[in-house]
Image (cartoon, rainbow, N blue to C red; front, side, top):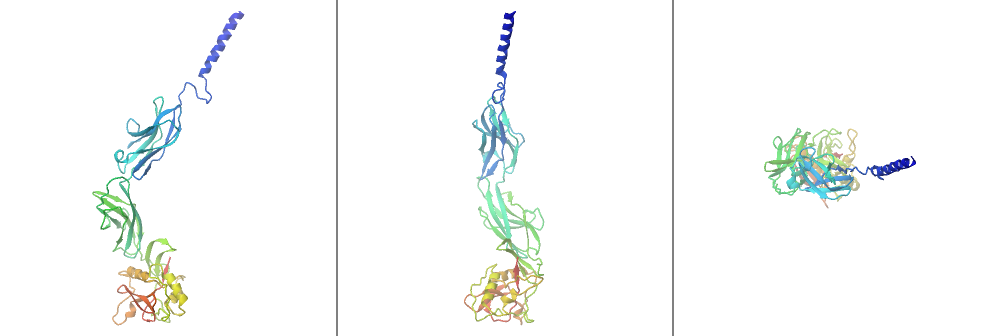
Length: 402
């Protein structure tokens, strides 16, 4: 009996030891089970005529032999029903592979891509779907409208980027614009550049615009029957009534140096009941005044510092106040010309009676260097000339900027 019991216990112990081969190994994975690798699809990188797919192998599982990407215009692409690229490796971590843009993709088309790994047992493990849209042949960037007057504006294209390494033969380059959204070359006004056959950015002046009106605008490039557009943007022509009650007559298109707009006072200056003002200090040379746009305030300060006349044009502008605004200056030559350009055919700033020339002249703050003369605007005919600073038949219109 004891012998039989001993034999039974021995067989039980052998069976128990043999069962250890089916238990978990040290990392908790059953020895007879294959762990699948894991992969995540990243966002494709599309730039400089290249398509780079991105993925991450987060776990190699029980091992894999190759990894890659497959893509198509339908969701859930596989290596059996779509195009794919791959490489032979078995490491974990991020990876990138570059596809051939010219043969493998259509332009301006939605695609789906999935990363994948091929496990040692032959299974293909896929990541999630990521969708992307291939770019058009080119991207055009409309930058801004600058030098905006009441009836004109200069439109500026910043860049033409060709997304594919192909020949570029534009037939037209220009702008289209109108007063409602959805503009294109078939429904808007069009202005074209004269030399379209290059990649260069361009700018053109749009004329015959309506004052104080919002316009919708696009840059465009036409190549054969295909037209490429920039994103639609807006600009508004000058001509609104400003805080002083006078006209906002100029918009440079962006805020720089602390200002963007120029506003003219509602009326010409009066001194001792007269609108005829002397420039002042006819025998003193101020020097260092400028003619360019934006130099009026500095010119005004320079004149006041050099000229003690109480009734000089610059000091009268500096002391001017209306509707609580006191930031006025005597405009420079170019600022006066902008005033004329915006007023032409919109509102009257001068007349030309044959016997009274004082109805059309305006002083600028621009002195003729080294002389006792300053620049004058003919507000009727629209040209600048110069006259002696003690001439007493000239008007003054203060400007402000903001």
